[in-house]
Length: 272
Image 1 (tube, rainbow, N blue to C red):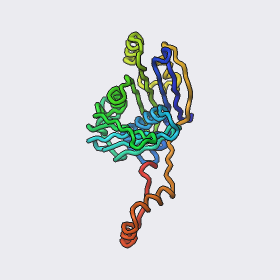
Image 2: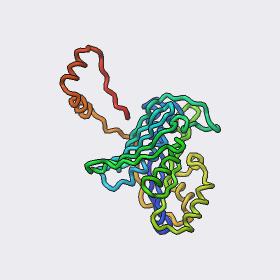
Image 3: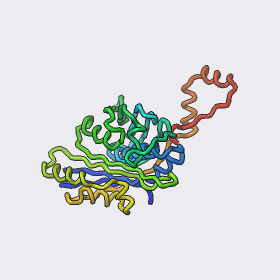
Image 4: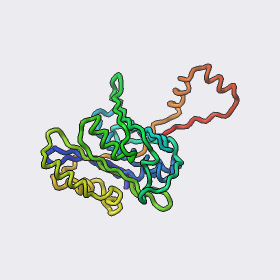
């Protein structure tokens, strides 16, 4: 099944919601970057979040970057998304191996302490940059904190990646639930109660649930209405032309110095 994002509302538009299945893009990234299981989980969670957050942007030319900079051995995760569901990303060190923590991949240990940065390029003179300290390094918790702190939008972010025994990706995805201004206290209380008992995303997916069913599980009792469904995928826009422009920007003297060294030079895209 192809990856896709669904967007919906509930409680007479007092709640908005997003959910994604992102197994294919996560497996593509794993294979392209040869990531270890814990790095696959970190990168996969971040890409799932970025795919949903990309669909929140208003203009077709808007681009958003999620970046985690941490003290852990992975060092960083960088993911970019556009408004069409195209996502690309990479990790600072793709080969990190850590022991399991509570029988789960220790994403927080791989990320460590540091900060989460959200950069939105909306065609203005300067991009919007929101930055918060990492709370757990588990990414979902950190984005929940970001939405509350930087965008003043109470949110619940759940993300997950489940690996097969051969280290390929079995399931990946997540959801974002957000409360709109003026939401009834009753809705808040009931939603908090529901979220406290909800099963992990990958467990629901392993049981055959897609994004629509997951949203129905979380907020169906509030009158869920699915607005639309968008394809999402790992897609990089690098090209020989982009590389040529990057080389030109180095200047003639620097390029001549590289040529004079006489050593083989390889140009790679960080993302793909």
